[in-house]
Amino acid sequence: MIDQPALQDTMVDGPVSSGAARLAASIATGNTPLDAASALMAEHFLAEPRVEIVTVVFTSFVPTDQAGWTQLGGRAWVREWTRHGSTRSLLPAPDAGPEAALTMPWVSGIARTQVVALTDRDLLPPEAAQDLEELARTEVRSLVTSTLSSPGAMFGSLSLVSADSGHWPEQVLQDFKLLNAAITARLTLEQSRRSLAEALEAGAEAQLAAQQLFGAVGHELRTPLSAILGYTEGLLDDAEHGTADDVTTGMKRDGPVIVRSCERLLSIVDNLLGAGRAMSADDQRQEVSVADAVADVMHWHRTPARTAGVDMQAHVDPRLAAWGHPSAIRQVLANLLGNAIAHHRPTGGTVHLTAEALVGESAKPMLRIIVRDDGPGLTPEQLAHVFEPFVRFAAPTTQGSGLGLSLSRTIAEREGGAVRGESTPGTGSSFWLELPAFRPRQD
Image (cartoon, rainbow, N blue to C red; front, side):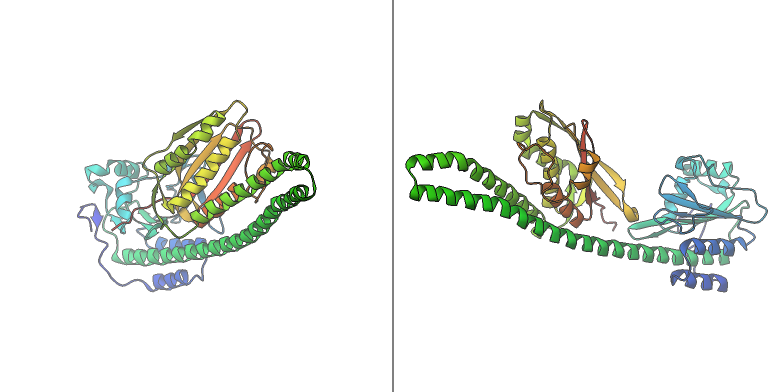
């Protein structure tokens, strides 16, 4: 407990009300939807004369029944319930952005780790000046608040607000701690169920993708092998039954076809070997510096970029770090950068590599590494098929197997991320790799 005159000790255990116990059991067992459970919690607390407003914020879950809920910033959902006859509201105006919501940085910092019971805003310390200003502006004298969180996950917050000052009744604090724990446990369960469903779906998709890949690989290998076998048999026949001139003519005629078929086979094998190395268990998941990974793949592509007249530029925050297999991340980036260089304009061009932090599904911190080119681009129809194995939209003179993007997507999904893209014909394309962000352990 932080020793502050403005804060009431909430670490003391005590009995809870029978109503809170029944409600907590209903919430934790999953018998009540989360939005309905929130309404029941609000009804329970508003029966206490000290409580004027109850607010619930969800940052990772969308209410089933969104009536009465307000969306802030695209991800957070907030709802407040007020005591009958009260005209006070803490919600920002409907057209206001998330910056209009109360922040209370000093109180919020403490509420991340424990239940905070503020008895009187005027007792706040000098470092809580912004909290005092916000509370005075909304005419709030005291509150009880805490985050809805479990280790490694933040689900939202629960708050009780009052226009009166003074110590909070112990019964209210004990009920608050119980119901906060119950809805946090329920949110954790819902997240686990959703993660399991996503994992099962991803597993089924990966199995289907593998089947399609093996089928496509077999078909694509058969074509150049058949050409090599057929033309080689013809050359051997010329050598056995024809003249020296026949052999020379045959080599000039059929040799280039054999060479192109061999190059096609080599390209396919190289892609498969690269993907195999990237998906092997030789290295372990670890912190991977995005700037270092980008610098490596740019170094590998210096010669082809110079030959193509393509200028490579990178702007990556050195503090960004991903969590994954280093070889896999570099393999995917190498595929994306190699494609951007290969599909350049006749006069060359520029490829930009950037990275940014973002929040993924289930509120997981993610990173996005973007490879942007100014090449010929793709039509929407082409983009819809570009991740299929052996699909190519390049000129016949551009080397490639058509496997790079397909294998890159498979590798990225194994890393817990994804590969996606967008393109505009005549302007260029952007393909990006999304990865879990590295999060240091909190000891």
